[in-house]
Image 1 (cartoon, helix red, strand yellow):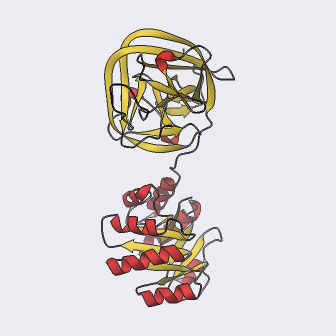
Image 2 (cartoon, rainbow, N blue to C red):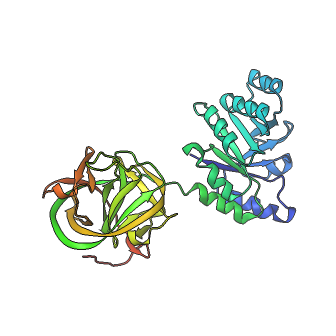
Image 3 (tube, one colour):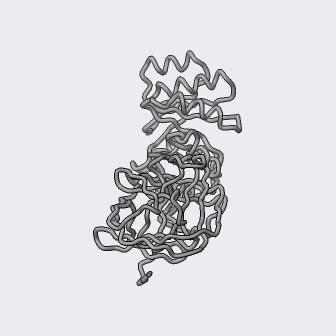
Length: 360
């Protein structure tokens, strides 16, 4: 679970009270300060991190480390607080790697604007029990740091300019994707419906063989459309692509939002979903809309919810079934089982809404 600390040392005095209140309200995990008296005013729900000599009411004492002898002493004495390392060259990078691999808490800042040194520290700390916290300059950098090496640091440390940035940081940490409870759907009928426009979704990510995206004609149900990671005759695999469906279809995205396939463009986001229901956010690199013969799949859940999906009428278009089993849409038969997702929310401009809505 990712977490955030805020650094109060450079917050403007006129903003300090509001920033502290925002941190408490937003349940920010920790507050860093060099003022023990200020930390003493915080409630027990916030971790008090003191940067400086070990005095006052603090949960963690942070020691600035700048040489190997100092770090060795901390390790030898079983330091239970945090080490702060500013990475500015190869020597301090090695210090940060050693600290992250051995100490319970390590805070790192980087003078290099690239993320290469951070990648090295994250790799060094990959199997360590301690927590790695990275200093970030703003919310945009925090977004980037969370995704470095598909892992990111365990925590972020931000010196906010105002209370609004505290809430932005909190929302960023809450923006992770949630697992979905997939359902087994039973095919009722397959119909050739003629020419129409379908969308291929080309993402900026490599799909696994049991991953795809959830697509459906109705907001109440979606079918798991597999990516082109499986071998095909006459053409190479395209592990970034999902031949998703007709342009009117809903596709499930992050934060329980949907888009029409026709709305996707370079820079959009959708959810990659595997057969166990695990999800991740993927970025769309391109959406290709082309006219093709279409096939309509109608299925139902065990509870009788009807799910509809219109796809290109072609053997190489595939969906996923339990097992997982890859099924070519042109070979589907009544009674075949597919994987999908049943949603209770109706939709208005992609947002879930509790209103009466009948789709057919």
